[in-house]
Length: 321
Image 1 (cartoon, helix red, strand yellow):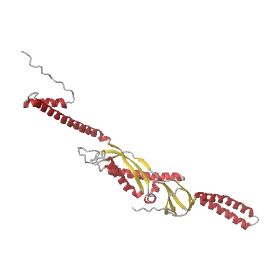
Image 2: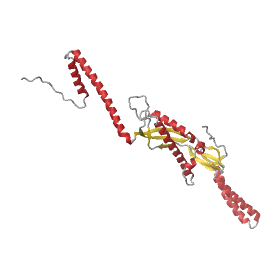
Image 3: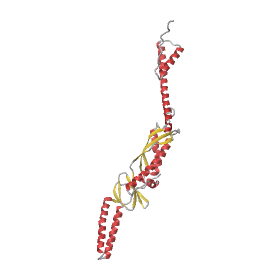
Image 4: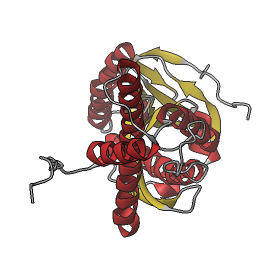
């Protein structure tokens, strides 16, 4: 979507110079009113004109006070003249502009959101709890003000400009939170929490965090483009099975770990038995027929694969009758 934002090109004057001039108008207006009141008795016409001049100077002083704006680093002012967008003012400093121009103050500073974990269904249909952290900021003031209904989202505030700006930015944050939840549900639904087998090529929420974070940033950028908001960083910071299946999945993980450990034990035991039989045959320690080999293999496998320590039975020979 093409941006309609452009830089404000209207008249801008030094704020300190205009402040000095406006302060001069106040004593001049008071002096004109007083002098006009004094002259009313002697010359009613000139006295009335002086009083009128004093009133006009006082009105000019009040109007000039409405034209002062202050812009800090990473801030901007959206300038509107009777509802028409006149540009975005970003020059840092104290300036004076047309007092009939209405301004809205926005911040380009980065803001952080630590979203509470939400329950979603992964690709396998398992309910999981997933949370994210994201960093965002405004990048397009026109879209932020005019493309979304930011005014109605903002809470009513006092007349303080600082409070109005704060409530407006909080309205943007609520918009980001809602879109962030939707994006997180969409991304989490494309991946399984974990693989149920040894397929290492399948991407999962637990193993492929960097790839999922990049997809999350991309999805959020697409959703927030309409509001002129840019995502600087988005990361999954919490991931767990939902409480209703957490115990079952823990037992499955324990079973998988036990099976893997058993496979390693059996593999090592077979290797050791094979090595023992080969060395006994090569060195001629003892000659074993097939039955004795089978018995030896069975005994060695029991000893090597047993979880508890084995108690050997020593044959001390046949007792005399």
